[in-house]
Image (cartoon, rainbow, N blue to C red; front, side, top):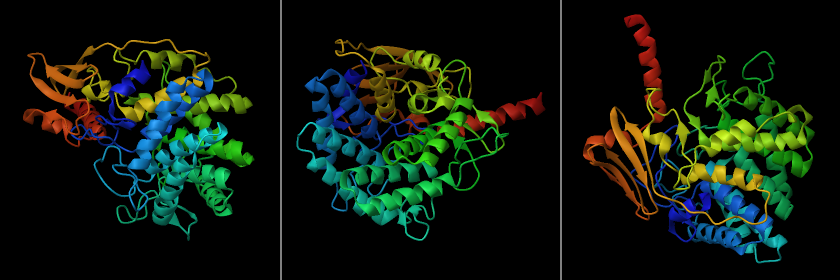
Length: 443
């Protein structure tokens, strides 16, 4: 079902678009194809399914994605529309470019193993890594990667982005044996490890801060750092990387929710923020914990069952998985942002499910249109999706939002622009928290 839903989100062969819901900022108006981290999980899921089923359909989908990525590489090595919630933009997008490269490198390695032509995809990834990631982001003084081009955000060092960029050069070293790549990986590893929290009495034990200063620790971003650490261990045999991954796994397990999934973050005071729960973020955390379960006796007792059961309940009849739970400022109301199905979150679920699949054949499945009640602010509405469109209507049938799949832009009713133009979900939720605090004093 999920692969069929992805097919409905293609703008052209291998190009995936649609609205973006994110914890930080949403993009509902621009829905054109984006060259972002969607392709990391998507390509790797297709390759995993081909590995297990030998069905050429899956390899064809992976190659189509790779061909599209090659077609949108710019002369300076960057990719067209390689941002996520901030598209359409040109330039270096660091973590999203790196994730695209990871998908391309997985494709190149897999095709090489099959004895098929792979240099095309390797060359595209090298061009981006050298001309964009290295030229724009490498700091030779600190010997690590910035998280953004200094022309945009001066002095930005976000640990999960540093780790993801270094992951690209780790894979490139495996392909090319270039010693410079290895040096950059190891120096970035040491820089990242420097910031791991080691106080066993802290809720943040084992976690990495979001930035270099002591601040929030997000489940999703700690999972991405853990993925880098596991890759370093499995590729280079670095014991300190596995030890750090084990500690970070402890933090992720501290964020487990009894109902399934993981809390969004814990802050430096040790307070846990339970909402919104990101579905794709939970899939990433679950994936690395399953890897640790195989690698580490410390995590051999991890029980993935409640998380998988919770996850599967969040797939709709159209085939896509929802973005989150708890985006509305009022916890009693199901938010429209919760329900949207986003390529750049569903790829993470897809990769997880592909890794769990143990059969040889995948039964043909059917997707059907859906209609789900939701709230847009304080207005009751319905979210509708079929193979051709996504739409939100109020109870009177007035169209609030409509995206015709394949179009670059969506329609938004003028009266609802504030809910669909660069809205920050974080601000809405924090506003609700402040209202809750204020109500204690008022009453």
